Amino acid sequence: MSDTKTSPQPADAADPDAADVERLSTAPAEDADVPVGIGFVGWLRWFWRQLTSMRVALLLLFLLSVAAIPGSLVPQEGQNPMKVAAWKESHKGLVPLFEKLQMFDVYSSFWFGAIYILLFISLAGCIVPRTWQFVGVLRAQPPAAPRNLTRMPVYAAWQTDADADTVNAAAHALLKKRRFRVAANGGSVAAEKGYLREVGNLLFHFSLFALLIGVAWAGLASGTANKLVLEGQGYSNTTTQIDDFTGSPFYGVNDLDAFGFKLDGFTAKYQADGPQTGTARQFTANVRYWVGDDATKLKKSTIEVNHPLEIDGSKVFLIGHGYAPVVTVKNAKGEMVYRGPTAFLPRDANMTSPGVIKVNDYGTDANGNKTQLAFQGFFLPTAAPNFDRTGPISLFPAPADPQLVLTAYVGDLRTDSGLPQNVYQLDDKAMTQLKEGDKIAKARLGVGQTWELPDGYGTLSFDGYQQWATFSISHRPGNSIALVGGIAAILGLIGSLFVQRRRIWVRAVAGPDGRTLVEVAGLSRSESARTAEELAELAVELQDDAPAVDEPSETDTEDAPAAADSPAAAAPTAPETKE
Image 1 (tube, helix red, strand yellow):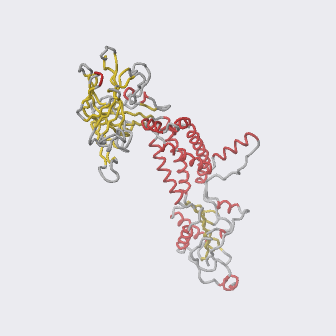
Image 2 (cartoon, one colour):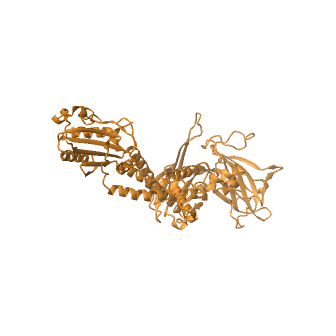
Image 3 (cartoon, helix red, strand yellow):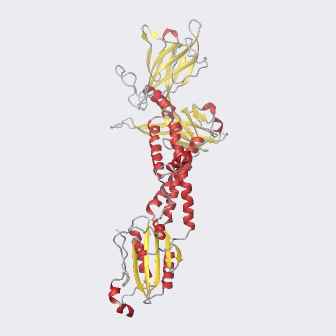
């Protein structure tokens, strides 16, 4: 009859075969949590074993995830310098601390790099020995059947009149058919299956390693440039046209990809009513681009948020949008000294946009002295009816009622001093604000209106506006490696979770009564009903070549009292897993 066990029994420590079958993992054995050896070398060994342990690798992976959080919450210099400048202006008290902690450049900070390198070393130290051990397991034959198969978690036995060699050969063929690795050894058949579990484990580790390499390579050989482009204007990916550039050790301004594009138009649509009034619904930049040095071979395309344009190894992202009022400035003689659009930068969701217009070539004043003009104020796409309580603000981001609110300055802009200046800010140290009587001279202009400047400095006309867009040109060669590594890590994790490593043994031995005792047993790394089901299917299929004997032989009849207590006296039933 079949023999099924319902209570677990520990493996015999003195049985080397039992100890071998208990080990189904290629993971290195855990070392003791105490220093190994004596002195400096012993401490180094202990530190290395701790660093390459699973718990430390998981801890470092968790720390890396936590360390990346500030990079998502705080604007980063390499991604959007304008947002960084706005954040610093709004949080002046935190700026010194954040700069010391490198919060505006998290992914290049010393503390992020330290965690990253330690995780890299930890994974390498785990992968190398585990891989060699797995290669050894693949080259070895499945372990021979233990002496006492009844100790296995899943077990069944029966007697048959078939020859032992015939039974073993049939078991060998059946297990081969089920895609087990099979080996015949000393009157028994050993089979093993589920190596994809360990392959999945190794694939997961290798994929994390590749992911780290991809991210590291992207950091070492990447560059990011930012450019504000007005409608109707173009951009060439060269040093002279970049607003700001962040390179890396292996990617500088001399490595920029050769291409360019023209911004033909910009489409912005907003929610017009409801609780989400003013929310952006569409930002689309319509461009024509070229690759190489020939700017005549243009191709049309569009750039949207999170849908960059890929050109020759670089990606062009749309990261911002705003308005540039077009003004005409004339001097006291009526001569035009300035005309064109000037980008104003939005400070809120309704596109209230402060800005500065600098007139460097104004000429001379009424006394014949060389002077310069500047205008500081706001462009309001949809101006509020009055500013008595709120100051100049826009009520809606779309240009429903565009207005320009300005004050005027005269003096020296100090653009010839050789010192760098922010084109979006006014250095008024050598400037004097124009007044009308005792009050500061101000103007609120609609499109087509003209402001007569006080003290005979001429006029300023508000001719209209243009839209602009800011683009981030990113070159990150390691992104594809990181993507493949991430996908492979998921596949490896699936394999390690759902593939079960298991072993099956079949032993057929001729008894003194002339019959053959057939034993089948199974062992899996984790508790699962699948092993018992597979063993039961194998036992049923073996019945074709080794049918169970229901009636006892003449010899068995004489020894009926003893046979009644034998676990192998009747036909098999479905094996059960020990509990």
